[in-house]
Length: 145
Image 1: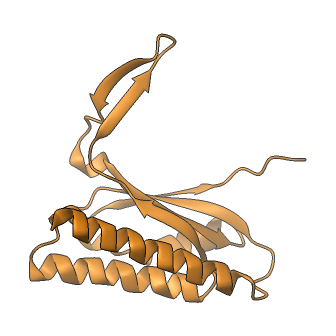
Image 2 (image 1 turned 180 degrees about the horizontal axis):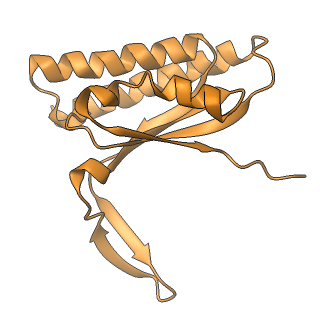
């Protein structure tokens, strides 16, 4: 059941990405890409079993769908809560990340915005703030040809 919910959430994100790419073909003006990195929050698709948690996940899906329909959403994924870390010159592999839950990166979106200020305004609509989470807003660096 957990895997099904995570799968459905990922499919929903990919659907929003597709909607976003179609909407992106509209004249949205000159935009840059920004990454919204989501930290904290207690609800994750893997633990969204209560009515409140399901409503919270639905709020996320509605928010992302709206971004997609406006041509803002480029893509994104939900991240598993565990993984591995490779460090240093000797490339030591350890379990991780082992950081406080409130600092755990739970997922990300790539969005279109005209500048950092618009990206921040978009980020302010994120559902993660309902759970006292954080959104880090970073511009995607373009390589010059």
